[in-house]
Image (cartoon, rainbow, N blue to C red; front, side, top):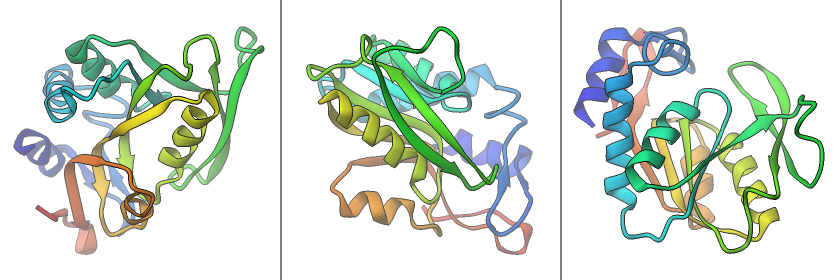
Length: 190
């Protein structure tokens, strides 16, 4: 997705060889037009797959997931970071470690929103080590639902996430694949 790559180059900031900051358009301030394009691209890549729900994690995955849900005409569920007075009963629960934040979070989805008849598209802002995707896979598995694939806005291909998910047989569609952040420069794989 050329517009996304251009945005990464013009507004992204390489903080280290492991960390890319994209808060100017994706995970703090959101570029609505870019999110619309991202949603359309995910919908094109996964059309005809019988998707009934999109699942993501709060907060950074919500914008691209909602736009994909709008394009596909399906509801979007975001796994909540479990600290809610209203989300207490009949939950699917999993844990995820955030490399960027260096913290572990407990994720929760209400069982009334996800069940065994659902065919799910997972959407997230980044794929690095695959921890977030594996936590979402765990939640979907608890519901007995099936997974159509994983849509990723930005993949850090130099980290182990894709290889681990590929080994488990998941279809992964990444809109921008980064080969390296060495020398403070973004180098794309494709």
